[in-house]
Amino acid sequence: MKIHIDPVKIEQFESMREPLSLQAAIKESNRCLLCYDAPCSSGCPAGTDPAKFIRQIKFYNYKGAARTIRKNNILGSVCAFVCPVEKLCEKECSVKALEYPINISGLQRFASEYGQKFKIEPLEQSLKTKGKIAIIGGGPAGMGCASALAKMDYEVVIFEREDHAGGVPEWNIPEFRLPEDALAYDVNNLLSQGVEIKFKSAIEKNDAVTDLLKEGYNAVFISAGLNKAFELDMLNGFANVLDYISFLRKIKFDKGSINLKDKNVAVIGGGSVAIDSSVSAKAAGANKVYLISLEHLNELPADKEEIQLARLMNIIFKAGSQITGLSAKEKMITGLTGIEIDWIEPMKFIPQNARQIRGTEFSINVDLVVQAIGTKPGSEVTNFAKGLKTKGKGIIEVNETFETSIPGVFAGGDVVNGGATVVQAVGEGKKAAISIDNYLRKRSN
Image (tube, rainbow, N blue to C red; front, side, top):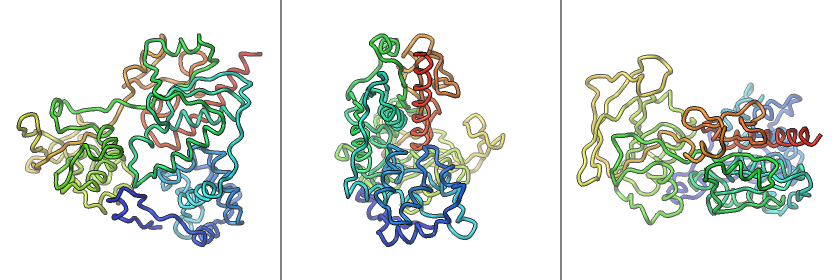
């Protein structure tokens, strides 16, 4: 099903989709086949259980649907906007055998907003009788773990480096994709469980995790995320080059600090954050926005809907291309040169595997370059505790229960999976909470 997206809303940095009306939600939920095995629910990494909340909407239990979403996924409101449903629950929808899948994200948004509007009762507070858990990072994985542990009656304290919780959804997802009040609603639900969030409390010093355990925390969950952007060496030192983290944050919270009116912007990368950066630049008034990626169009890691959104906003794709040089004046890049590429070895998307195609050289004039070629954990992660095992790029190693090489220390989310979806991070946080509970139960026996 094609979902209408309003480009005017994007340019105003407002939600680009209209919500489902009550009548539309009823009509959409009535398409559900009430599958016995509920493949849509099996396709949700966070266990949101769309089969249940769709059934509740179908039988007019709208508050019940809101409760189901909130109970199963502390970021249920956020996921209604940003979850790649076409790869998960909607991909598994049995209705696909007959026609287009059910609009699960639309129904999730309807139910979440219904619950918010009619003020369903707050979540039950933790009794805080089972022990004290420290969580490093208040992003999706940290929130998922905290909520699950609070339901088990643990005392949970989140140490968050910023002045707001939410991680990537808060700082890097543009408002046209995720309204601020959706995240605020989810954070307030978490706080209603009695979870404490210590803002401006970065955990950075050496052996900080060991210190937390010595201070009386029974276990630690690391969900520090990825906060160090990769950069191309040739672009270092220029004043008009930003990484996507800095760029999206400026666009979202300090638009006045960056003037893109009638400017040309080049975004390097082909994933979701590259699309977000490109569309944000265009919405902020850029004249031309170029998306330059090693991957060809059919290889882009961004979701199909994100690519369609970029096309709708007239982003210029320079796919299957590699930057080869630049022109500059007084530490300001004025142009980029590049060349089209093919792959030496199929399906190996790294610069070393690129074969340049002679005769396909190009050059573009630019006023700003945004690098969106990936991120890694900050350097502090490797210093969290002696003996904490990491692998390439500083990713923390965990076993199948999300326990690290240090007993009582667990990790999940992007700092473990290298960067995935919000819904996967929430799911990993929930699974880690179960493992933490099992660990502490065994230790007390």
